Length: 527
Image (cartoon, rainbow, N blue to C red; front, side, top):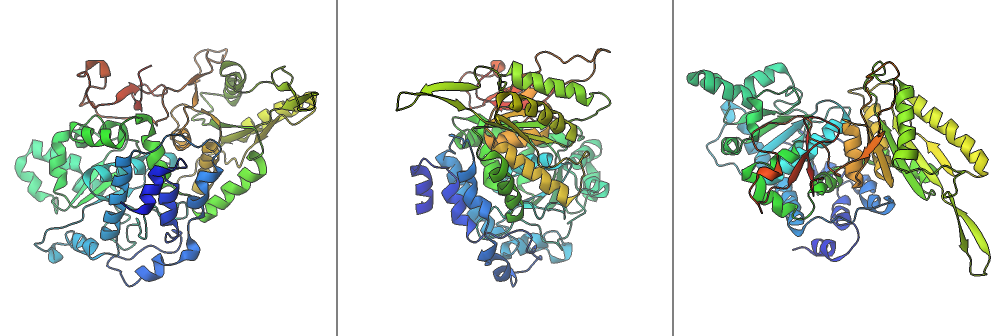
């Protein structure tokens, strides 16, 4: 065991801080360049640029206002260490990668045993969905001894530092299927679901699928079909073990369902033996260190507006349709939640806003608790109204007791935009630095923020109009049951009711999501 790994276990600071600092000196900013397949000559140029070290990896554990007390298990740390060694051995600059790549070209295939197998992540939907599916893909790579590569488009290459020591996770820019993996033609040809359907319908037709022994697509998006979902049956996994290249298309946090699969239960129980609500918390913090450019925006805003507050409250307000849910209704709901339902905010003119204590001189002194509210929303009217309301209360209190802040408002979600994703990531990380979070139902953006923070959020009630009076539902918000994100769309192969399982089994408690009718999430105890 390395000295750095021993230090991680021995000290009570952030469990990852030393492990990540060990990697930061040789990690690169992903904007430098992506590797070329069969490269090698470019490795020294790309990977030795220490001036591009990842600043956020060194600083993030210090600036977090309420760092999680949860620590990764020794077994998880050992698996991460093993993974880093495997990734370096198999990354796109390696000869092992070149040998595996030749399996995709019939004229270059060799009759040799491959020592590296891959899962290639491809982007679907918004940034929150992507971060959730990347973390799930990485967990699957840990479980199956694969190497995770990512097919980032131009809208993502500037967001994160390289996560793995002295290597890259980028799929080479000239790789065989880069940029094609999300096309209907690719799915029709290489999808695991299509293969299994054809095998069922007509056995001999499976011979028409080219290179199925070398490449399969896992189509695990919300719109997959019953054949695609066969991935989640333990009986399917031996087939996939023989395939060197798996290409994943998913917008879901499918990690919870891996806990239900008998073939993975024992390993996952060793990785997360005590706290099943920290799967994304640990993996997300390990994988997603903001690039230096993004980190500069995060720290600049934090230092200017949030750092000096006694409490930081994050409001993540996602509006799926203003036609169904007017902004005025949502604003009333947010105010009811933070002032009445959860008692997060106490009004400046309330007696509990200030406290009187005896000083060392025997005189009484009054102290005021200051609160910073960060509003993260595409729509500016929520910030405008909350800021106006609290300004009036601050005037009555004679001090700035509550400050309301925002980083931006863009009105609409812009898919495929680098600047939009960068602003979104800034908001996600600023929210994760808050002490309390109020999030919108069904929002993957909110899932990522509270998962990185390691906080159980207050979740606003869904407010679709049910009558002409447009009344706010009661209660306006509820405390979540878990820190974990929700798997919104899942298969139904295994019983998700813990009451039906054998006592003492390794399967963690899994509950329905409180904000999504058919979703599942990991929890430590059934509520």
